[in-house]
Length: 391
Image 1 (tube, helix red, strand yellow):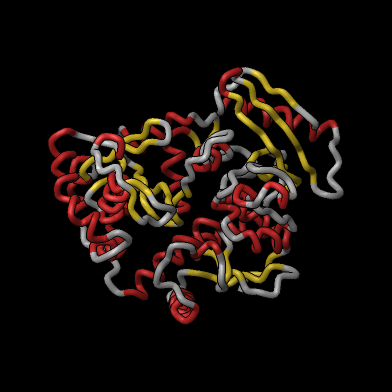
Image 2: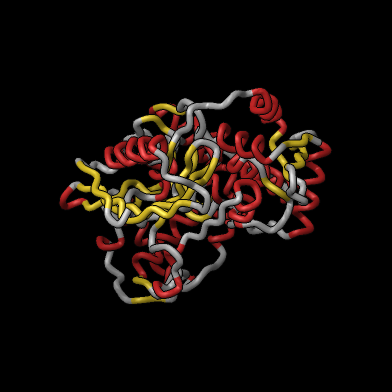
């Protein structure tokens, strides 16, 4: 058992995520290193001031350029879109680990027979013509689908994507163009068998992956476990006990938190390093709404004394803040939240609102840090100026 103060627990999480001190992740190599560390980055297509995956990376990768991520996904194909923590971006080399999910989609799903009837024709169309979007293949009548009724063309493409026959070849705006997986993924990866046929072994791998994605995590219900289909309480307990016995995870007790937390065994040296470390020059960063760091918001509340809710799906009259609000990190604290909008037509970054946490004073030092943060964020969004409104 490792005992940590709250301050040490905060530092550990921040250092592990590359959010404290000097940037440890740089360039496309840094993107790959970070994705390898966290397993996946959650994807969301909404773009108010950058898409979620881009927002995650801009807070960690020095001088991050959105094109770097696009190149790794759709030119170099070292990364791939697929479901892990919901829709996510992961290493292409992780493809074999999700075979059980692809197999499951082959046997059923919504509007199964209608989709099944046209799958071969869709695959032949893409084989002959190359990457296509739902606009290119016809089948425009609506069918029952997971998110809402949708065109049969989209449902068929997404089903073939779930099954692993297709992958996202590239994107234009919000439209996805699909191609055959065999033309986009290295043959050795495609032909690799599932490394964990046994269900508990697979669950253990997923748990290690999620602990690594956050840094500290507990054995209790959490949004951090989303989209691990087999993970019920009893199996989670069984997997945790096995991982402890195998010395793959280590228990941590954090001051004033009753629940036991866990880290990867490989992170024990980092814990000792953090305990010894001196104060770093504070960095000011805007975090993504679906940042790995924030996957378990109850944990963030417990460790950082910061309550955050993404209010995008909250009716406007019930929102406490606004539609798209980013948590604000300064040094070792989450000090507030910011509503910021990329006004693309005028290449202006609008800082519409800043809400600082109670007790946080906007000192001259903080103001300088905020201005630097907003300038960098403007550059990330291709904006030429920053305008503050109601701030």
